Length: 221
Length: 336
Image (spheres, rainbow over the protein chains, first blue to last red):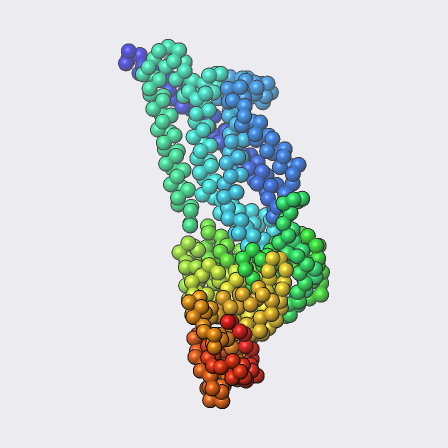
């Protein structure tokens, strides 16, 4: 029993970890770039001192809300045509990274919007009163003041993605989650199940701890 | 000169529409310290935000040195704001930026050359007495120090106008004194126009040249500081001034006044503040005058004395004595 578990882990674990890392990197980078941008759009188009715009804000809100209301498993299925078009297949980590990225972008966008809303409006008002341009205020005031909140938002998104990426195993995305389902669940290899779950627990704990510590360090209040 | 013409500001729509500022017209002269005082909720903060268009007026015009800025937008608006510094009740410094970065932000906003910024910030911090704090974060400063950094930031681009929104209201007495004396010095050394919003009449007394009193969105009285305190006309002004002087007679004292007694509040101004009118009355008439309460305040080096006195004597004599007092003091107000 133990020997069998060890054999499976030796054969599959490294590959699974590699696939998970691949999915995580692609979707996290996509979220950091596009999620942050979308969050910024949500914020500045709703704020009268920036560039309040009901139409753009309404579209961005709708996009974020619709994506966030689709259960991830369904989102993966919906993304199959897109996977085929972009990477030519609907199995494997690169294909799974597409729905993961889409979910992560929408999720982070909402959190980024929230982090910006936490910024003291008085500080922004003071910045506008100096006659500074909007790009300068975004760069030197909004991002600086929201930075600890943004770090926390990135951390939560990362943790969420670990969970989603495990789910991606369900539709052939590969990775640690796939290992847990294929061996731990379908083949009753409880040992494999426990080890994979432990790995996920450690990763999530570590990510949360690192995120919290960075957020604390960059908070100057 | 700042001119406001028929400025109104309303928020909301329909039933819930709220008029924060109603038909305000004001002229603020170049180089003066102009105060706007009033109870909270009077619309003072909204009005001062209209001056640099942080708040767009619903109606009316704003003229700065004769130029109508009401419709200014984009680059033009930013240019106008660079000529107007502003400080706030809660300082509003960037918490994630050092003192240097906070002040330099205003310089960068104005395109000030980067290599010269350090020297300029040092100069500004020296002016507010905070040179040694240049590289610390605002969190490690006291309220008074934060406000001084905010003043340095507001003056970075040598503006012609400084707007102060309740700038001392979150500070303790000592820090308030510090900030007021810095503002006073700045005004002495330049021709800057300062517009100062406050509900604190102590600050008003020390700093302002002229005062506008605001109540429920309207300006109800404008006068020089001494006149506002010595001769308040509008009931709101009277209420604010009386509250500031803290010369209310306790009820049990007022209730104990006899049939042959009367209570008066007497105001002395200028040189007359030193006249021994009370002595004189007691000598000339057969009345007893007792002092219940009193103080002398100095506003712009002019004395303003207030006494609460009880006059006791027979009706006819008492009336004659009061008539004499009335003639020899600045103002006489019957309390009971």
